[in-house]
Length: 173
Image (cartoon, rainbow, N blue to C red; front, top):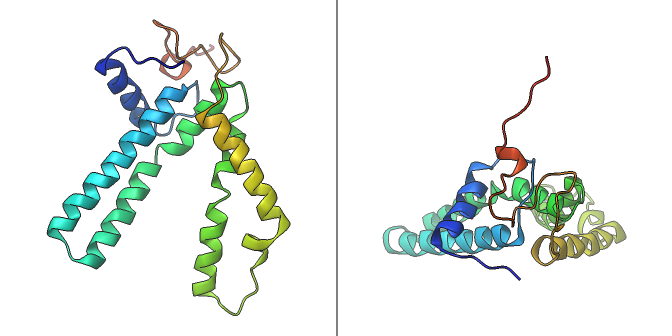
């Protein structure tokens, strides 16, 4: 059961996600992932609405696509930290990129229509990857994290804990 006690806790989750854009160490809770998703969808909606008032149709689509790319920047590190929370290697997060193969196939259709590349989006490897994608998505969105400290750090849901990535780095002499 996820409980957010007040607005400052919500803001702290969002700030950690944005500040940790390239921080693949430590752990992130389910609530951090859900809040990031909600905030990024809200930002995309606001950008699209504002763009609708001031820009031509082609410019709106470009701005919407750029905004979509910007909100994706923190996602890889956030998803790696989320896998760490359930005590799995962050490499599992690569499964979340499988649907991008479909986009790659569509791009190749336009760029090189004479080159056979259907194996990218129609072969058994792609569909096996999609099964892995749904497994990874379930872990990120639904699976509870480790209750205690694991090999990736302290439980981010416990009050007063400092994520490993925010702790001072001990340097050996």
